[in-house]
Image 1 (cartoon, rainbow, N blue to C red):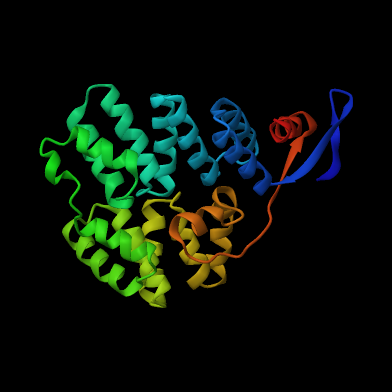
Image 2 (image 1 turned 90 degrees about the vertical axis):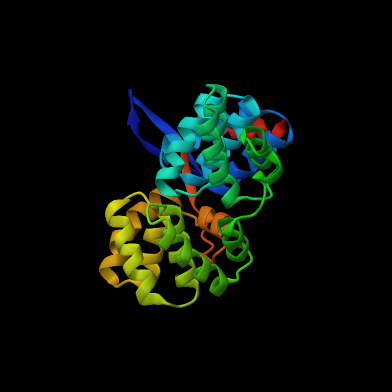
Length: 272
């Protein structure tokens, strides 16, 4: 932990410290393991005070609000995350549960289906889809989108790309399918096609993280420069891309500069 001092504030020097983001991740994970979601949510809010669009923290908040049964709050974080990652399973799970609580069964079922297609083995998602489906015995059958997810997460990029091409043709409005096709093309070294798809996506979806990641990787120096701000604001250490999309990113340590009062929240969690 590095000590530093900011300029004067209200006549006093505001003391700050730099703490690796990984320390905040570990503290939030510990809060989950110790059944202390309120503490984890407070830690997440500290991170968002300094990185308000940080996607990995959004993901933590989706898990924490789920444990706290704060369905409407989870829905809000889910909507924010879907702007950057339109197929994110935990985000769709949060929206589905909130819709279900409001008695919107058909709407909830469609959202559970979206979550299921991106995480077909996640128990809560499977339960939600079965609960809201009229034909429960068939609700959990894998469709082509589920199979594409399994190919993608298994690194079978050629098979994933072939399925996602067909899915995009069948449902051209599904941005999540386009994102997954783009990632598969990038990993197959189909750079030109991946580049054009990325350019198309970020023009209509400026907060789409993977579009900027692909542009940074395969574009020219102007694309690289344009991609820096969205990437640094949403995923500065690459944790989200590595963990969610399972593609390599530079392993960089990102330090969060926080006040001493905020740092004490982290210290208290470590002592608990």
